[in-house]
Image (cartoon, rainbow, N blue to C red):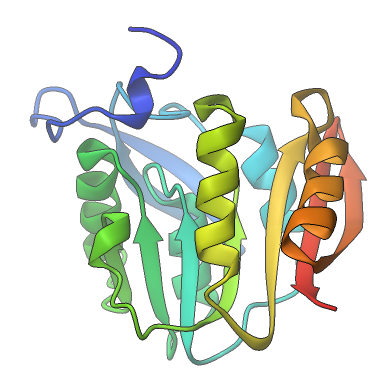
Length: 201
């Protein structure tokens, strides 16, 4: 499997391919399902862990977005912390979406909607966006993705992105400020990862 294939796996994992994993989310040890063919199937990757450990609690209500959900660690955390909010778990990988749906059901989280990007209604405005974005899709695709979704933040809402320093976190911070006209603040720098808080100027 090439480096980028896990972003575009079309087929949900079969029962034989799925496996159980115990992880810590929102201060709780939970059991989730994962499978090969997705990003970080064997653990909560370090970048996502840094994000989850270094952002303020999400809004208690409204529409929250996990951009590039994988098997769901960010979306599940948002839903656990904000049970009255609606959480959109967005990915282009059908296997990831299927696993996120299964994991939300396993944890009793009826407020998670795991969908492809074009399935989020146009009128939805986001109260928060959390993401460990798929940097390796390349700059043009990444910039298009961030332009689209950061543009859907509600007035006063914040996005929090985690990006590896060696994967261009500092240049991405400059690009968001210059090209999207957003305020971008580095709120944490841990183990080679930057957490960027993005908001209106």
